Length: 338
Image (cartoon, rainbow, N blue to C red; front, side, top):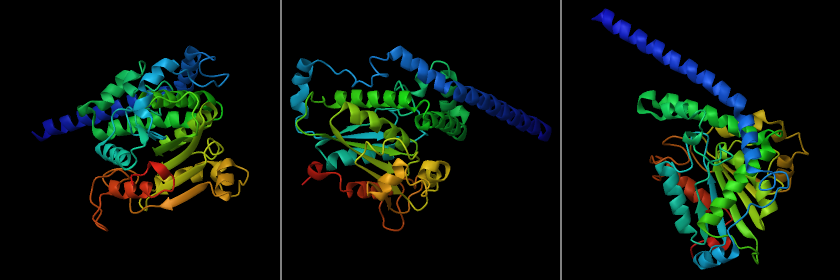
């Protein structure tokens, strides 16, 4: 019996190692072709509609907008949520994220919440929509694959896209694609006015790598739309170049137990304090960048920014603490419930 058990354990060990080796090879291939995939997608979209001229994406005809404009006449801001690198698609928010966004919407009824933009695909497709690598992602999502393996695979894959968004060689193409997806989903939620009499309020709210993608998209949103853009980071990791000039303010919120948000300040020279000329440091020196410690949150998990566990220090859930901190930011004005 012991011999049989040993053989079984050895088989499982070999199988797990084989799976991990194959996954590692697949991820290396994915990382190698990621920039190529972005460029091919851009060529399919066409320079006129997306890229070289940086034109605003086409919206539905004015008569179609007019029919639904009354429904959104009292909306004066858009909250765009871009999740972290652990997400599989834009339509699979975890319960804590759903609670957070629903509560924020109730607190600010004049805002429209957009939560169906996937920041790790220029075409706004979930991992299951990636034809070449779809079998790997389906395996990773299978219950028998193991939650830890699935999480690692998805995070590494999405980190490649995060890197593309920060890479000056590919960022202009990738970030325009995300900006186009944001404009499209904004218009689907509440039609954008063709000639607004006042700037739109756009709040790009992200966590982890979603903050870098938010900043990358901000540059193009500013060019295409008459908008005042604010970026809110929840433990975000970001470069110190993209988006700072296009954003009025960036609020970087972080928890005591989150070591991940410090990574950006370490690995990106544009975030180093002696690089005074970088857009990040210019925003910091001119008061357009603010860091706020919001409590005992970790980066993720039940004690993370969207964690539903009860915090022993004050009896609130961790996501409740995050909601309170975001709601206190001086960015809401007339959108707040009175």
